[in-house]
Length: 74
View 1 (cartoon, rainbow, N blue to C red):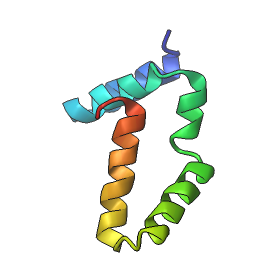
View 2 (tube, rainbow, N blue to C red; view 1 turned 90 degrees about the horizontal axis):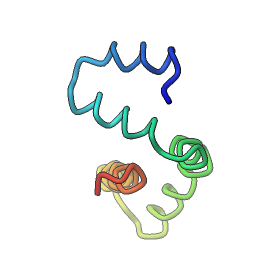
View 3 (cartoon, rainbow, N blue to C red; view 1 turned 180 degrees about the vertical axis):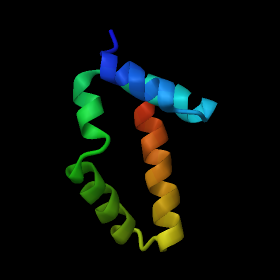
View 4 (cartoon, helix red, strand yellow; view 1 turned 90 degrees about the vertical axis):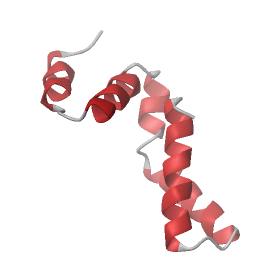
């Protein structure tokens, strides 16, 4: 069940794709909602990128893909 604050934020999102993804994020289990934006997750993504010598553009693409996988979009 969405909280009133989450509903208000959802109503303020104009872009339909962003709204869909935010709603999907809110429906994830609590543990996963905490994991996606965590510093630890970002550090692991950065470490994997450094290990594989990814460029800054590749790092951005990689982090986007990881986010989509965690969200269940990919």
